[in-house]
Amino acid sequence: MGIRVCLASVSADDVRNVINVSSAEVPDAKVLKMIKRAEITLELETDREIDYSNCTDAEKEFDLWGRDMG
Image 1 (cartoon, rainbow, N blue to C red):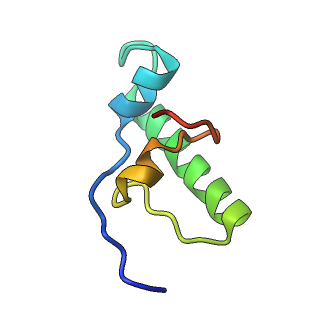
Image 2 (image 1 turned 180 degrees about the horizontal axis):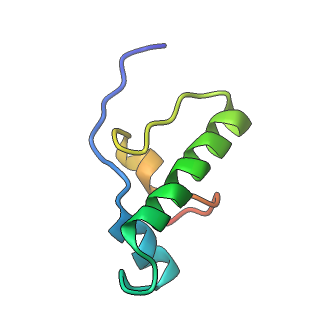
């Protein structure tokens, strides 16, 4: 693996914004569980190591469910 420039992270608020829900409706613990599952799924599908808490802007903008959020 080459050097990675890490600039961003996916937060619970990022996910809630995409799916249009509030923190009262879906608490952080639930969203973080969704993020971790998505991270593992992407790793298995792409054969790449993904770290949602330390990723490039491009990786962050690639939605957890495979849709471009840009």
